[in-house]
Amino acid sequence: MLPTLDEELGLADVYARIPFEELKLMGYSTKVVVVDGGSKDNTVELAKELGCTVIPQWGKGKGAGIRQAFKRFIEDGDDVLVMLDSDGTYYPEEIPKLVSALPESGIVIGDRLHGTLEPDAMTGINWIGNHLLTWLAVALYGKQINDLCSGFWVFSNYAVKNLRLNSMRFEIEAEMYTSCVHQNISIRHIPIRYAKRVGDAKLGSIKDGTSIARKLIIRRIFLTPHEEN
Ligand SMILES: Nc1nc2c(ncn2[C@@H]2O[C@H](COP(=O)(O)OP(=O)(O)OP(=O)(O)O)[C@@H](O)[C@H]2O)c(=O)[nH]1
Ligand SMILES: [Mg+2]
Image (tube, rainbow, N blue to C red):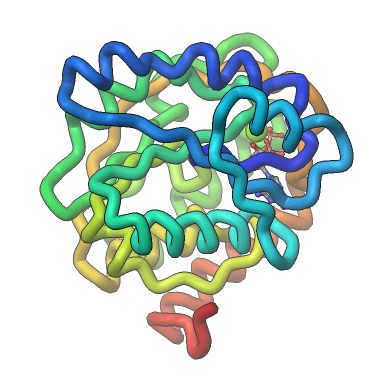
């Protein structure tokens, strides 16, 4: 699953680097689902040309899109879901390594902070923010997490079914972690590479960093969302 918002510069390359053959040898048949948040560039046309299934999301924000893609995944009855950003920051070549590490009924998080950060992949403020938010998560929840805001995750069907989420924007990964704690879903961390993105960032470091911290605090008090959709 590739979330997109104006990612015409990154999408084709990310798609081309997905190791379909290797996944086939591992016994998987693969489909690529692009969940799009209303791109104004050529992203949607490109995704269709590449043969991806496109979900035009309702509402705005990465979190809303991911939750909608989760629903489709459950409806389709698929086994394993791999999610990564479509901005060229994550290495699709690393998908098999993460899929192989998937615990039964659990999830895998690609860990940039103990992996390889390529030059200029993360701004100074984002580096500090990622470390602070990860530290805050461990302080509040006591369950190990190495890289809270990673955008490269692998989920078992059980995990997707049991996550309780209502995030609209970039708090979604933090909420997935809090839900793993509350729903007792096991987490494995695998070090990954992280590259400089192509195209423009959609995340605002201070604004979204603050919402992520707020989400961590809210889910410590109210364990699950009051209303999910
Ligand atoms: N479906 C959907 N995807 C989105 C939305 N906003 C952002 N995305 C995608 O979510 C992924 C992460 O967004 P980015 O802007 O790269 O945010 P980030 O990776 O946290 O920040 P950078 O390090 O600056 O790249 C990218 O693939 C975006 O295209 C949205 O509203 N809907
Ligand atoms: Mg990014």
